[in-house]
Image (cartoon, rainbow, N blue to C red):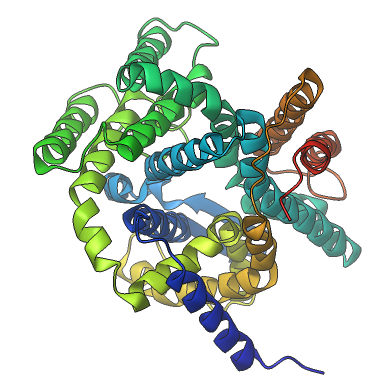
Length: 453
């Protein structure tokens, strides 16, 4: 019996309305709005930056940022990863505080929190592996399959840092309770020292530290936003945004950092690989703006229709993020592989006009992917968080080992690059490492951290 898509859509709308109506009155809805707007900016920014051509030799792709310099300042609007770490810090602080108040502990909290990230990520990696196997069985060139899997897995670099930050949250939040805003300030100083050592003196092997230090600093700002150390008063929010913007202009336009807040191939210095002091200045600017709009955003989200839309987006936020580059893979094949969408010089009037059908097609593909795979994320989110503390050296050690394997696997995927990595399109050892870590975390959670009935 065929499922009626209209009936499915109506059922989904009713469910989102029901969930939205159950929102506690004290919830800071503005944080959810920031997350929804940020994911839209990430998806749209990535889709607009893709430059694809197709000829007799196959597909060729580049980033528009590499060939159209006037697009670099636009990355100040589309680079919103700092917002994800900011609202992640807010949400993680609120969730951890609630867990501790009810008698839980940091290990149990980290396991429950990580499950919401690891499960949809596992679905993506398994889906890419199966897709690669099918494509190769149908005769696709191994190099082309490897390129498609690499493109689809680009979002995973974000999770390398974010999962690490989540597992450090119990320790960093305890440090925050003692030292407050001194923590992100010290972390920012360390980022700046790393930049000086790396860029001015050529000190090797120090850059990777900023992948953790910079994002931890932004995550700590989320802690301060949650407990009121960073209030939304205009006297705090607006000067913070102005100071961040002034520092950003000084560091990029007049200073040594590039204007682009997204990495551009060929540039000696990039603001995201690793994160720099300039990216932290952007984060401070965005934090100030978020604080300034907080009260207005919460008032606006009292409207049931708008709040329901925000709830719907947040219910599949990871699915949207993880699968949006897979939509690009399908879109390239459908639009450029068939010649439906002609090639045009990037940045030209025709190229800009062609972005409309390009984005519309990708949005439709992503909507289908969300319908298919979004249920795995919603199922993980519906699982009640355990409040019983997870005690003992063994579960703590297994949790650390599982988290380390997951992060190592994701890092391996992110660093693999395009190319033929075997039948699954992914390096076998890397995929095995990730899956082993994910399974270990699931087993620890099931045995030591069962959900309450």
